[in-house]
Amino acid sequence: MKNIKSFNPIVLARNAIAATGLLTTLNIIVVALHFTPIFPLSLVLPINSAYYLFNIPTLVVEIFGSLEQFYASRPFFALVTILMMGLVIYSYLRSAKKPSAIKIGFGVLIFDTLVLVLNFSVSFNFLIDFLYHAFLLFYIYKGIRALKEANRV
Image (tube, rainbow, N blue to C red; front, side):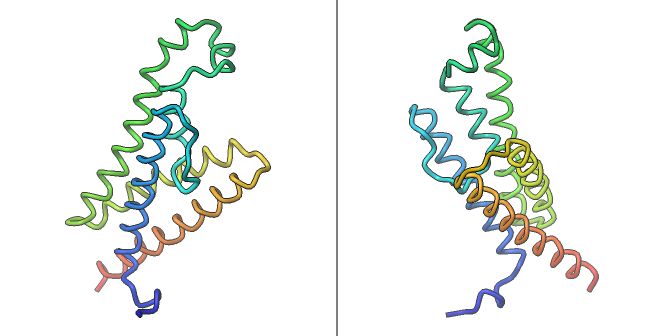
């Protein structure tokens, strides 16, 4: 069995983006079926916006004032979900031929990590999500750094 240090960092970064995209997509499907997300290892913002897209929590109706105003804001939540997932999928698919597309996934992950930190709550799920985001940021950063070194040669 190979040591993980012998793997190509670019491939590891690409696979990290793929795993995150897959788990986030599965969580969006679970939320669309009106269950709670089952995988803590996914992006936060698309899951939250999918929750508001497919469910009608009473707190949201209280914030928006009426059900009609909430329904009027649903296209925004759909756009956020589709945009975030589209960027992750594009980053993964495009990085097969042009590895610098990993930077797009890195930007999405940085933005999602900021959203996660701004929604700070002391819980075990927050700790798992934060550690997972830090792990992904580390491996994607290593992949981007390996790309720069490969381009210098």
